[in-house]
Image (cartoon, rainbow, N blue to C red):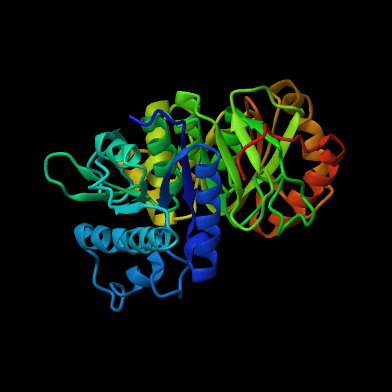
Amino acid sequence: MRGAPILVQKFGGTSVSTPERRQLVVGHVRRAREQGYDVALVVSAMGRRGDPYATDTLLDLLRVDACPLRPSDYTLMFVTGEIISAALMSHTLNRAGIPAVGMTGAQARVFTDGHPTEAEILEIDVSRLRHHLDRGEVPVVTGGQGIERESFDYNTLGRGASDTSGVSVGVSLGAERVEIFTDVDGVASADPRVVPGAGTIGRISFERAHELARFGAKVIHPRAVRVGWKSQTPIVVRSTFSSAPGTWIGAEHDEAPFSGIAALNGMETVTVPGASVDSETLAAWERRRLIMSVVDPDTGRLALGCCDQGELERALEEAGVTDRQRAGSCAWISVIGESQFVVERARENERVLAATDATLRLRGTEPFRNTFVVSSTATAEGVRALHRAYSQSVRSVDPPDVAI
């Protein structure tokens, strides 16, 4: 046994999409090993739709006509992109003099619950991963996938779930932390494409990071935050393309009362009686079907939103909910921060939105979060107005020193 601390690094599709970018990955791995870490990698499929081996490009091969896809065919094609990425990244590391071995979800013994396209990880048997680490090798594991223990059929963890794989591998190995490498410098206080100059958060608690991720901050997957939170394993979100320290997500207290603004746009929204869907079902709908929910305090009705109207309708039909009031396509804008601070500012937030073209239709207040359901056409204006209102309380805090 080598006994060195373990660092898991997850690299997204843009980070491994070209030879030049893969060399940047090599640099991050080399520096971490020089600092005494045993390193394991988790990788996404290369690039985005239109790139030859991106997941959407591969899935488009199955979508040449209107025939419905068999889940087994969809899943098998879905996992292919990550397998290509792991093989190529392992080869790149070996050519650079860093011993590495590419591994599928099956080879890494990632066991999932049998749901073909939105599976959850039940267990990772790390014996084979540790074998390679003990030999001084870097395991390069495919993200977003696992297998059923009995049938050995592949399952996928859903879109964007390589983050979840990365944190799950780190937790199972007892890693000191997990680094999520992406194409931005960290978690921002708002989407920089909507709010130019939005500051990068230096340090944020698991609780608030989870709320930001759930309600629209796309830089890290909410399941990944939840896995790290449960085990108290720190996560660092940082850029592949710079030495910036990124955002530290951990158990420590937040350094500012306000964390950020998140938004979910194009949400087909309905309201139903508050007691018509139980909390366990709502949690499952969010995990499996990306259906979000808030309780409107003015009416007591439960607001449900999903980007896929058909998925939302199917869920309600399965639950036998017939009392539905449609609100149409809406934007869900959320302010995340310290609980008392958020509650005290709720009415002020409404006034800020009222001064824009946003028509407030529903709202909800939970610990760490105000959510406002408004007309979709006013998403960007509403986000910018709320961010301006909070800009005086935004301040970046340096995270703990980490390897670069």
